[in-house]
Image 1 (cartoon, rainbow, N blue to C red):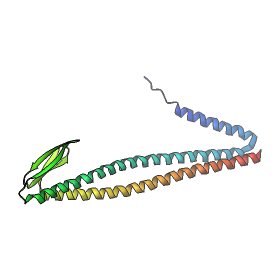
Image 2 (spheres, one colour):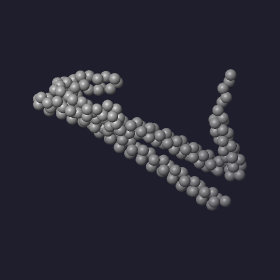
Image 3 (cartoon, helix red, strand yellow):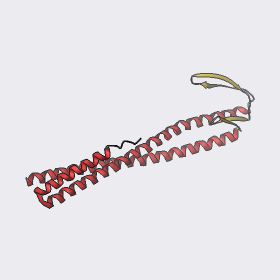
Image 4 (spheres, rainbow, N blue to C red):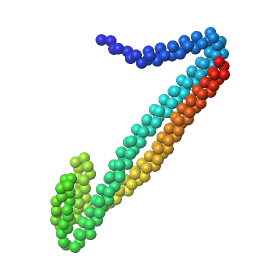
Length: 200
């Protein structure tokens, strides 16, 4: 079975043919100078539209990258307090280790559901690494690992903030450029209208 061809390319071709036909008809009344002037205006108009389309595509790409970076920033901003909380828990366990008394702790089992635990002296803690993986570490190893993770998360957040600022600057520059191209086009149209009014 044959595929139906899209009519959009044909519509574009027909539109260009109509425009060129008008230019040829106008040549009879205005001469070759008028034809070349109108053709130049047509080419400039096409170039302006292509430039605006390129800028709009670039703007959409910037917006897409900005959305991804904002999602990463939200993830890191949620991750940093969790790491700090884990560091506090490990520090509390280390401080309580030599006293001989048990530590009573309330912990969240599920969202809004808490349970109480009695923690005896312990030399190790289990850290949840994600992807259904949990490893047991000594308190010192856990502190080092969590500290490294915290430093990496903060450094990544700083880089993300810098990238987002750069990206926002690029978005602003692109929007201003599009506005200038539109303003230039409006100005050129007004000049053409004034010159056409003087000619007639």
